[in-house]
Length: 205
View 1 (tube, rainbow, N blue to C red):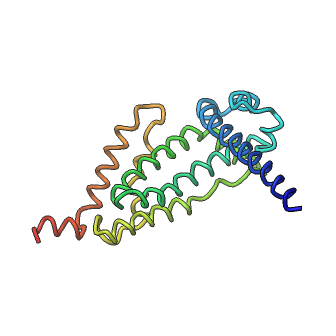
View 2: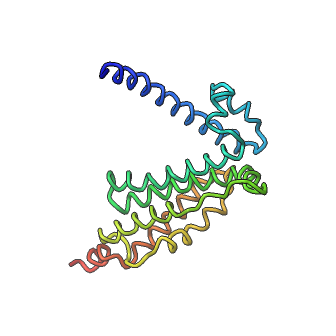
View 3: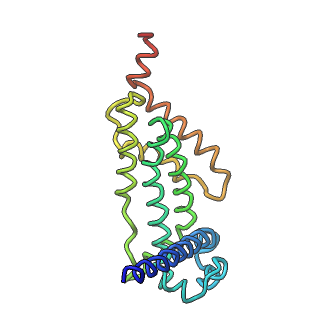
C-alpha cells in the first residue's frame, strides 16, 4: 500500500512541475505579445509558448483571465522580491534595487494598458487587482532602512510611491532605464537627508 502511494507521488510531482513550467512559459510569451498588440490571438500565444490549445485553455479559459493573471503575477513577483532583497542586501541597497524591479513592473503595466482596459471594461469583466501587497512591500523596505539608520525617519509607503510618480510618465517604448535610474537616485538622495547614520557621519561623531 505504501509503495503505491510513493509511486503516485513520484508521478504527480513531475507532472505538477511540468504544468507549472507550461503556465510560466505562457505568461512570459503573453507579456511580450500582448504588450506588442492587445489584440494578439490567443492561438498565437499558445503556439509561441509551445503548448497545445487544451493546455492553454485549462490554464487560462479566456483572454480576460490571461491578462489579469499576467498583472497579478507581475505584481506578486515585485512584492515578494522585497523580502528576497532584504535577505541578501543592506536595507538601502535592497530598497534601491527594488525600485528597479518596480520600474520593470511599471513598464509592463504601461505596455499592457490596452489589454487591461479591454479585460476590465466588459460588464462582467474581472476587477483590476489591488496594490495592497505592493504597499506592504514598500513599507517593509522603508522600515528596514529606518531601523538601520539609512533614511530619514517617518517616511511612509504612500510617500514613497507618490515620490516615484514620475515613473508612470515614462514611455515604455523609449530608452526609459537611464531616466528611471536618475529619478530613483534623486529619491534615494532625498530619503538619506536627515538619516541618523548620515548625521553621525557629517558631524564626525
